[in-house]
Image 1 (cartoon, rainbow, N blue to C red):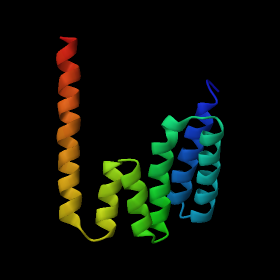
Image 2: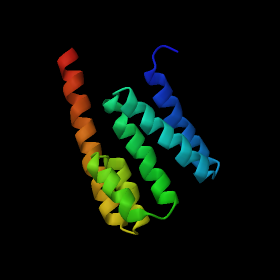
Image 3: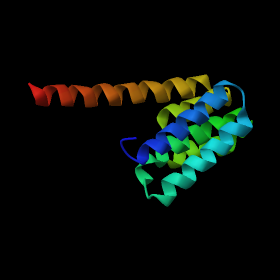
Image 4: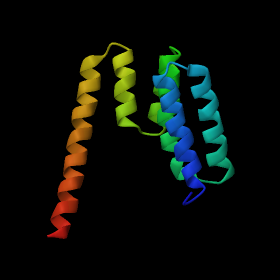
Amino acid sequence: MDSVETVASCLVFLTRLRLAQDDVASAVAALDEAEAFVRQHNFLFRLPDVAAARMLTLLRQGHVAEAGLVAGTYDLPISRARVHLAEGETSAALALLEAWRAHVEARVGRMSGSKS
């Protein structure tokens, strides 16, 4: 492995894979391990990735309000949109995604403009 940080990425990936396999218990276990690893090695910049996966597990478990708190704490727009969808608030999800799209396009435009 290139770095021990790769372990955290692999555990988050494993969480998402387990969710796709509808194995929520294993997903939660992998996620708990990922979060402990990130905190133990002080890779706090990886916490948003862990939080996004945590939000998915919470939604799968039906804990929509708690998922919303996680998504809001780490400012995860796509995760917040998923929470809105889980709440049946499609207009709010769409508005959030449109704002996020505009933000990303503006950022990419600034990056492209600085390279010319």
